Length: 289
Image 1: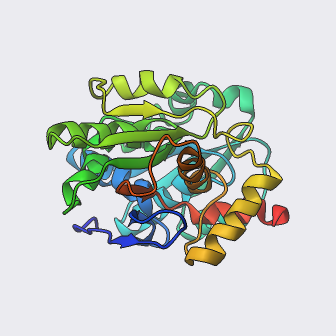
Image 2: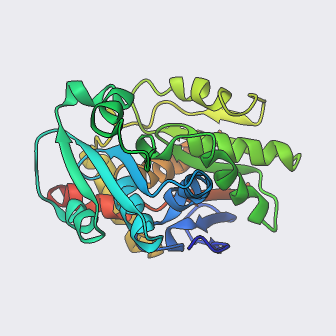
Image 3: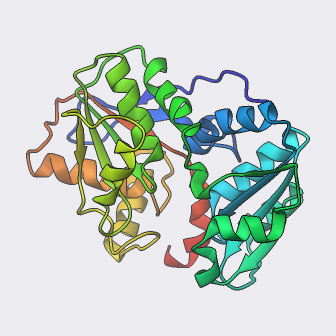
């Protein structure tokens, strides 16, 4: 099911930028979009190599990763189960997971912290069970994300990407290093205290001067927003016709605009922003709009 798909690069008009481009990974698939597709591509290949037929993964109630895994499993003829963090709820995202055939197990937040223990407790005797970490974080996810760089036909002064676990960032950095580019990789952690992402990246590829983390655009933490961020989404989408999610891509574009205002990047710099999808995250914050 994971045929080769190169997402388009589009130039967008956003003042005062003259060379702002977006890698539209959000267009790869409605449900397995963006970096979720990139990460799962080789994870599922490994599952097939090991003859595993039951994918077990983890996420919150509004996790794009859960929807992506459920969709990927159903298209591949596999079973899927997810441990969902927190009390039992019903929402649009979990409805999609259920429709794709995913079994949902709700667990309290304390138990959720030890994912391997949960896996062993419930699936130790299931020889077909295959563990997939939250968000798809794994060594297999790195080459899929590195392929973003391989697909580029032009070079850029800056590449921007939002980050949660650091897996996508590690793949991008690895791709930049492999192709010996002079591009600066600007990572926007969406969690408060996001400096740990540098350590996560280093697990998968050596750090280099290409990498720069911008730690001041988390807006209070993961899945946290402010009225200023929500307003920036409305303005950006009205001006560009490009939808953003409140958790990842909106914080990345806010950072790009703010860093230009500070003079850290120039309005004539050639910039590529990676749109990592996740647009269904809007459903979880519809009351804020």
